[in-house]
Length: 237
Image (cartoon, rainbow, N blue to C red):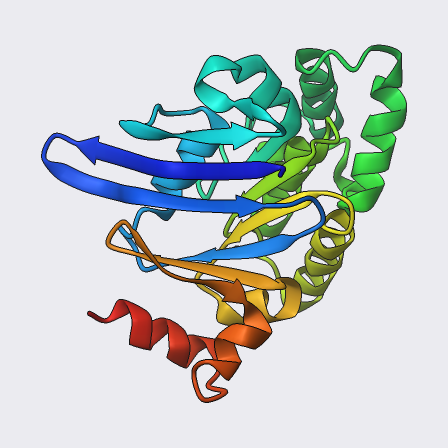
């Protein structure tokens, strides 16, 4: 399994953000990780990436427990957080070159930077400062930094935020192609994104998993309702 979560729990003071959840995701699967604001999505993703520790339980990435193997985790995970923090004073190619050095890509750096710029459609923007880009192109830079080191697992939090309809289609295609050989965890509030890209859905509410199934099976089990209606019925309690 590329990602495995067992009995994962996170408590802030007396508030339980994530409550003993478990799931595993194999290679080649794109999973929609859904939930209302405050449900525990971002907390779970941050634990998987090693950004914050769990209170109980464990997260495993590519066969190794995250908290004991942070370098291994960082090598194997690409992460695009919702906030998409970027160095606005750096030029696009300069930024990706900096990241290639952080990831120690060595002689592969220039080739990989060229590949990522082409994949994310940043060719016309590569010599511009990141701070001068539109929100949509900043989002592309965020996606580029997440895949620069060719990770086995890609975690994306609202990846199409700020993109126009044509850009959304392009980024969807990129994510789907990535998901053929890698593992993708996609968190979004846009149900159409999940229906377009994901073959499995995990829904979390108030720190608990309330659904974990293939998209087709989930709809069959809920009178063939659309995903938005299913999501509402499972998270309004």
